[in-house]
Image 1 (cartoon, rainbow, N blue to C red):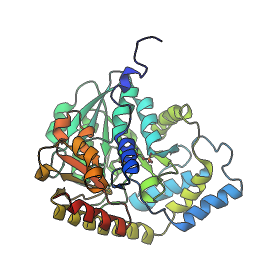
Image 2: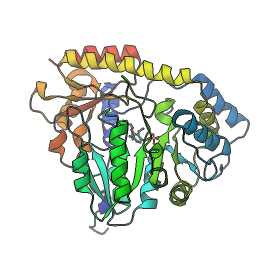
Image 3: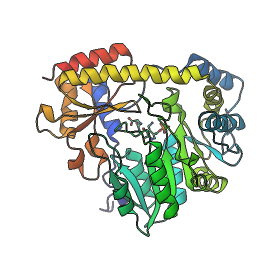
Length: 388
Ligand code: PMP
Ligand code: GLN
């Protein structure tokens, strides 16, 4: 065997995701898993039944069409129109993917050349770093700083160089819960137009905004449609993270480029689930408002418990995560803290430090999810109170 490392050097240091590591730790110790973001209650019964029906009726059991089944592409276009007033051609401007994860990978592989620079918020969702690296491009972080985690737009401007190819946005933002305002997005849009940049937005938490914050797709702002690839997914909105149905929307040439890459990653995505998600997207408004309200209540329950336990809580405006500061517990770094947390009190969490290039920047930040049953959250809060 040659002595060269097996793992490609672009993926050096990206061996195991923090989500897999902390979920394995939670399982091994029997801790309540508030680390990886997945609900412990499945999505609507009617949507599950729709998947069963599709399976039984033989819809999607063989390779579905590469861009996605027509019913789902139409439902995605209808959803974008219903919530954001965006008009999309379901045949050329919508692409179904295997979760937002594949959408991110296909978009980066499609749009980037080696050496291109991508400006992305930091802390960043971990697959961004891996996908930008796999495309041979360079990630340039724009750090969101506590306590508000709002982007500094002058700093953004200063990071744009002739090599900058695209801005990778994520709003509502995982892990901080920051939601970009329309004013911030307009300023970002103006920079994108001025410097002729592409914009990719990860909007998987689009339906999870609280306290008057609202999600506005940057694609709906003037001059942005032709330069924006919008990414979303059914996983978070409908509580079916295991189904891995995501999508890309945008102008036809952009979607065609992403489709070219997607063809050689998975070719097509989970057939019967596509029919079920088409029905989910057409659920009445009451579903979306009810889900949001339920999650807001859970956020308040966990935030209050974390504060009582001694954490400094950064109240999120969106997503189903709460970022906290652990300094009140001593000088331990977030990763060491999270490694020990299951043993100390029977709860698992995720250290934000791994979502920064410089782990020192997120040294005292730990993320907890609140997409769990109320009794589970209450149990977790009681356990955390023992930390003292
Ligand atoms: N982007 C963000 C910001 C996420 O939190 C996640 C996890 N749901 C994804 C993308 C991946 O989404 P999916 O599970 O649909 O692949
Ligand atoms: N998006 C989820 C999180 O941030 C889980 C992602 C994953 O497991 N890859 O926790």
